[in-house]
Length: 373
Image (cartoon, rainbow, N blue to C red):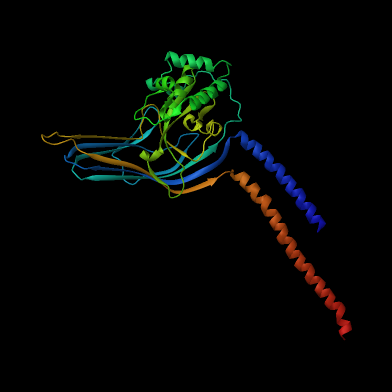
């Protein structure tokens, strides 16, 4: 029995050492876990009158993979689109067109998606010095946008002050910190942009995002806006994009390294947890300035004594299932082994104890047999 106990202790010590090595290596690989979702999103539109529509065009973003923050395993449109397109930012869109859309006519479009959100943590990595690049992704991330006006003198002056140390990654963090803490959240009816936020000190996710982007581009560091659903997704969760799910956040780009996530809007309430990290709360739809994930256009023939047609639309997201794995497969195998071996030892000891008890009883029985005669 003592031999088996020593063997078990030695095994656990060995497995603990292996686990520590694997954990350290995985920390360098930044992936901490994975969230798998099965979900659907639906777009409903109705012509409530009083006029028929001569043409209706619906453009909806197709949920797709965006490395490194999102991977789509399966996508299905319940109603086939008339056609699909991909733009210069690699956004994928499904287009639906209808002629002679009558009063009280409606359409419902549903899309089913299986996707994964890797849980990432880049905060412990050492990045190379950021240099301007000439590749396609860098040019995309540096496309001028007046909403994130990096040429504004106020933005230029602030960027120079935040870059006092000369370290590019430190500057990126300073820009993130400033955007998260300087701007006070206030929901706006339209996008005002970085200059407005700098002058007034408030805005919503578009202003947090445009401020961060403008500051980075002022120092030749590529950054770009992404649109997303943002919510505490869980099985049974249902919401509309008007119900606090619509969100904007930036990612920035280091040539030779890759695309990295930050979220200064959420950083205003939890600074560390939204710096170079991802979680299960954000599903990305499009990339680029002024790239909405849904767009509706329609035409009608004006008539005297009639008002304009009333068009009602709504966009709903529903979560069917969620599976969260915080460890990689190799780490799960190690954990299983670490816990399984002691259990095996307990079962083995129990069975061996029963066998020993049975042998003792048989031996005692044999010893008592002569006395019984």
